[in-house]
Structure formats: C-alpha cells, structure tokens
Length: 441
Image (cartoon, rainbow, N blue to C red; front, side, top):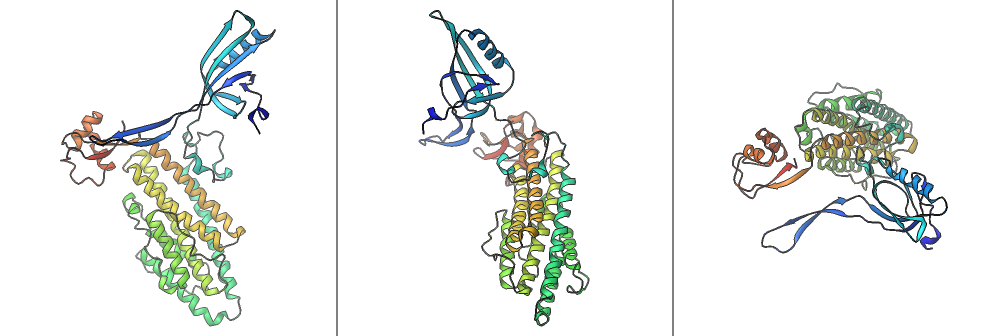
C-alpha cells in the first residue's frame, strides 16, 4: 500500500493545510574526541535533536485571502501546537520559519514555505521506565507534578511498604496453616520448626541482638514480625553503609537449615542485589512446591527478600531526600543506591510472581514496583539538579583547589571534585594528563 492511499487531512491548530511537498529531517548530536598522532576519533552519541519538517503549502481560490489570514494567525501564536501531518499523523510542533510568496501570474493564490520543529517536553523522569507504573499511583493533573513538589515521597513510600508487609505477613500465615493440615505432617513438624527458627535466628544476628525463643508453629504471626523487626534494625541509614551493601547479607541467613533449592535460590538473589543487577529466576520453581517443608523454605526466602527490599527502599528514600538539600554523593553513587533497591525489588517481585497465584501476589507486586519507581524518579530529579557530568583532562600539574579555580572560578568547589572522584589518591598533586569527572559548569 502506498502513502497516497493513506494520506491524512493535514492541519495546524485546526487550520487545514494543502501540502505540495514535505520533508522530514533530524540530526544527532555527536561528541568527537581525537587523540594526537592517532588516526580517527572516538564518537559519543549524545542523542537525537528535534525533528524538523519543512513544508510547501498552497492557498488558492476565491476565498484565499481569508484562508491565508487564518493560517497566518495560527502560525503567529506562541508555543507548540498540533500538526496533523499527512503521512506521520499528530505531532506537537513549533513554527520556526514562515515565507509567503505571491506571483503575478496567479492573483488568487499564494505559496507558503514553513519549517516546523517538533516539540518534545522535558518529562520529570526517565519516561520509558515510568510505563510500568499504575496510573492510580502516579495519577496527576499535569506532567510536572514531581517538579512542583506536590508528591510527598516519604508518605507514599511508607504507605506502600506497610501494604507490602501486611500482605506478605498474611500470606505466610495462610501457607503454614495449609501445610499443617496435610496428611503426615506431624512426622516433619521438627523440620519445619528447625528451618523457621534457623532463618529467624540468622536474621536476628544481622541486627546483633538475640531473638526471644518461641514456637513458630503455634505463634504463626510471630515469624514475619521477628524477621521484619530484625531486618529493619540491621538496615543501614547512611549512604556509605548502603553503598557498601552492609545491610544485604552475602548468603541467606539460616541457609543451612533450609532445603537445598530454596537456599541456592536465595543466595543467588542476594548476590544479584549486592551487585546491583537483575536477579535470575532460573532457580525458582513454577509455583509453590507441594512438599510442605520445601514450601516453607521458599516462603521464608520470600519473607526475607521482600522485607530487605522494603527496608532498603525506606533507607534509600531518606538518603535521596537528604541529597536534594545538601549533595554529598556523585551521580554514579546515587545510581548505585537506586540499583540496590531495584535489584532487591525485582528479586521480591520474581519470588512473588513465580511462587504465588495472581490474586495473592498482585497487591505485593504492585506496591513493590510503585515504590521502586518513585525512588528512581526522585533520584533522577536530584541528579538533574546538577549540571551534566563530563570528563576533563588536567593540562598541567595542579591541586584540586587550583583546578576548581581554573575550571569554575571557585576554589571551594574542590570538595565537589573530591566527591566526584573518590578514587583520587593524591588530591594535592594531580599529574598532567589525569582525567577527572567534573560538572560541565
């Protein structure tokens, strides 16, 4: 099918356009870095610029003056307007150039040359990563609600974390009650009790305080509460400790009491969280195992990983809010905190999705993903408060204070350069040729 069979009625701000010809153009911004005595450059793609749409229009007929006047009024308005392109459909554009040409041989017609520039409004956060967030959580009257400060991050995260914890606590109780009702379970009660107490004791040791003795099979609500309290107490509150992953254990607490499959899955998820990468779901079964001891082991893994995700979400949210008022971290360190939360949340979501049915897992999954999205959005906003970060070469030997004076005219910004280059060993004697991370302005 050719474009001639699918053309749309072109218009701008509702004024019809008779298009004679059109062109679509754009250009990518490239940063080229050359090396002396070496052929070629390294090229960094900095992104595509605005699309440009040059057009040739014709206005003719007995009423051409009225039609031309309407067109010029539409083109004369400030700001973006909707262009219905005959081929590409609706576009938000700004009119940049206009040229109206009259020819003596055609007294009832005018040729109009236009240049439209596509308008892409700056969104408050990584637009593509916001697609998975429910409209009910981030519903807002306009797209700049984050920037206007209307959204109370802490209140929302607290509410979502409370929702997560209420659901996983109830799900744990239901699982154990179901397991206790299976035939022959009394022969394996000791196994259930052993692995529950082993995990609870292991988590309590993270907080460096002993847990009171209890029977997990008669005090069903005690297990989630013990795990939650211990993880909350052991979660660090400083950015340094969070970046060091000191709140995420290297292995599953009490893993030696769990079944092999559950312990291996848990350890894999914790390793991914410490590395800040997406977890691998290959070690998880499709659905909760039928064996009650195995099911209990995986339920304990769900409890620990989900509570780690919830506790670290609150801790990282607090650090990010402090950064908004007084920056102490580099953009890469802020990204590391967000990656930590995202990896834990992804692990918790995978566990919920693979082990529980849709009705049970959906409330927890929605709360988890919305919490992660808000933290990532706030981190993005804090990062954008600072100028873009670039790499700058030290031309002659200098100290950081001298470099800050040369680059910014403010020697006090040496503290900022220390923060952006934590691996710098000799801040008072930086050799020529050293490449440092610094803000563009």
